[in-house]
Image 1 (tube, rainbow, N blue to C red):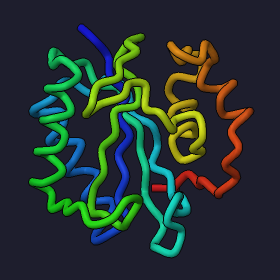
Image 2 (image 1 turned 90 degrees about the vertical axis):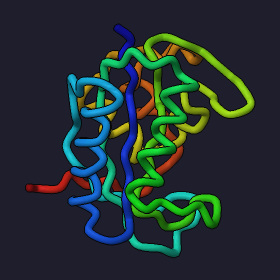
Image 3 (image 1 turned 45 degrees about the vertical axis):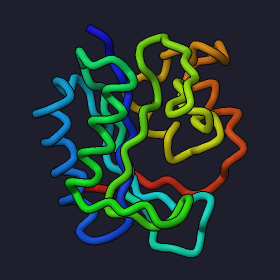
Image 4 (image 1 turned 135 degrees about the vertical axis):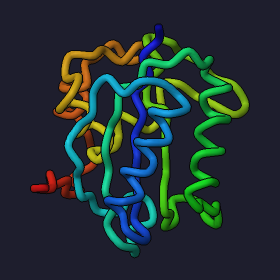
Length: 161
């Protein structure tokens, strides 16, 4: 069964509760969660004048093909109240597909691995926590190597829960 790595993010409302709701919906509809990182507070990236995000990476065993996975993720985001108003804007929940096994895919709706993964500490830090040696199938570098070379220097802080 394929493993997909998903990044959850929230910077509006009760961020911890929204991440929990997203995890519950993912486990119930997309597949079993086999690994999860800690929860990290991260400065907003891209559009920086907004509240900090909480981020978490999940490894999910799924039977869904990538395009169907994306469709289901978009449904979950909408169910949790996500409204897409502006790129990189504030949101109650954001769920990104980082990897789908070793697949390299580019369609009109979906690019896997996530095209900005290597440029974002808020993605790489939780990924390295659970799969440091996983090799990016296009860049041929491990998550740890990508983190060591990441140009993003925004703070990423593990929450003590």
